[in-house]
Length: 340
Image (cartoon, rainbow, N blue to C red; front, top):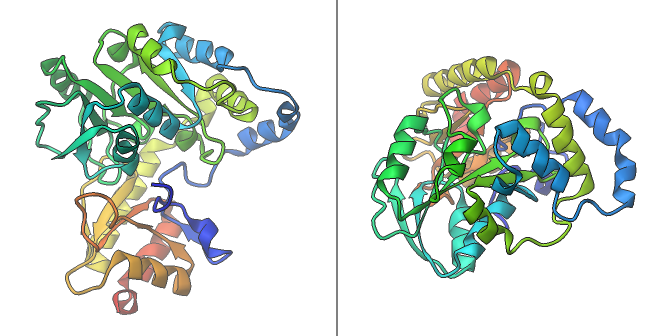
């Protein structure tokens, strides 16, 4: 879908003071990364590499795989659409509720679609299975061993596993070599969520060389811009300095979940990561109404999650933003007026 995603603060002028709708790095890109990109603005005066060759090689070295196992993309969503294009007309199964772009990309490329709720691992008669792990918006996660066992039990199904939030979770994740050693697994990575650069668009796929050739056949030249390529290289050079403060973020999320349950009478889905799926109590109105009221009265933006397949009109998602901001959200939701 073109519209209906989170982080739509641009629609609300300057009314948004605290943004809980975007589950990327709180506070945006670190200052050193922003300064680096500002100094590289001259890069926009020339074409970028036609197929991101240098960053492809750097990522391959980082993961201990070959360059012909990597495809750098204009954000993770571009990778999703490349995969759907490469298997046009296939039978796709989507594990729900989840990110809408798997379904949308499959529909654009004429896939037949079926849907499986999380935890009901029925992959029969599927050419492709789309799985977000950790899952957006629920925060559910499968550990590496469990997921590999599922993948290996279904060798005729291509598993497309989105690891966009793997850095936001302490559960062991799939490794690049898990994908390169199998012919039924593609991993989707986002470099912009971890580093607070969603406006720059940078992602990549990891898979076997055979599957990579099939997917890359649809690549357009110069599909990743010069600043994004520079940012990717910088992030690989500064992995320790740019690492998320994950222990603190998970502690903040647990505190936020407790506050929402105790003070706001919400159902809060257990989460292994740094965002929370919440549901309004019966009779409290819709998430769409709540979102509008929180913007208008508190300058707070939440993610209306009612448009995720399988969720009801009272579902919304919030991502931790630190103790002070999280406290403001709990306070606003604890007011009776929030649900009036």
